[in-house]
Image 1 (cartoon, rainbow, N blue to C red):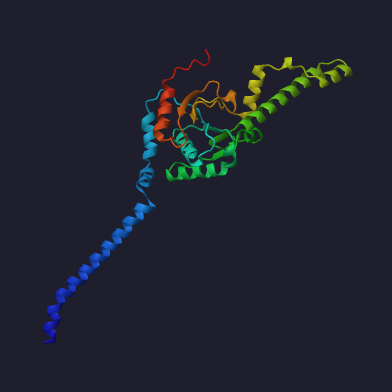
Image 2: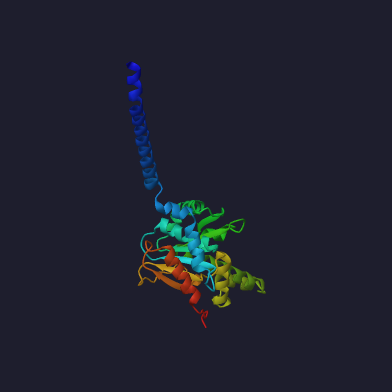
Length: 276
């Protein structure tokens, strides 16, 4: 009696255990899906699959020319370090190694380490080859050698760095002019008089321009993205933007890969006359 009862209940018990297993698997799958939805959104897979890299390369493959130096001029009062770091990464993806960013208050110079970390982390996420990235103010490039193994240089510009570089160049030219003139003087009195009053006629605009280039080590920007109000006349160091083509972007929040590509297409289609 007991044996027959046991065998009669066995199929239902097996069905019950099977249902329990299926329920447990369902719960595990729900937890698994929730984990990936909240911790790894769809954009993560899009980025990790290098679609961003492919998009930039595919969207620019037909361009006739690519700028060697791209600059981002922030005319807004605040800076969005995250948005600007993304823009730097787009330049690196395209193979542009000379990048500069300018802001009115010099805020980026204070947050340069954060900018450096964000750029490096983003490159790692995109599975790009490791590159040495250095973000530093323009004045730091004057006193440091950034050519030793640094693949990517992000120069931070501001009105303060522009004034400081201009003053350094003026002093260097005046000192060189005084030394040259003094060496040709025939008497101690002439040397003394020359040291008291240095003639400005010995310094030309071309000399000043060459000295600024020598001190900064920064070439003229080919393409500059003006980010912010269109009525702003902010330009940190005009001598770096004399030959640049300007592309207007409404705000830092509006910086997106397609806007970046649109600026590149604009630059590629411009017939540069270089002041002629």
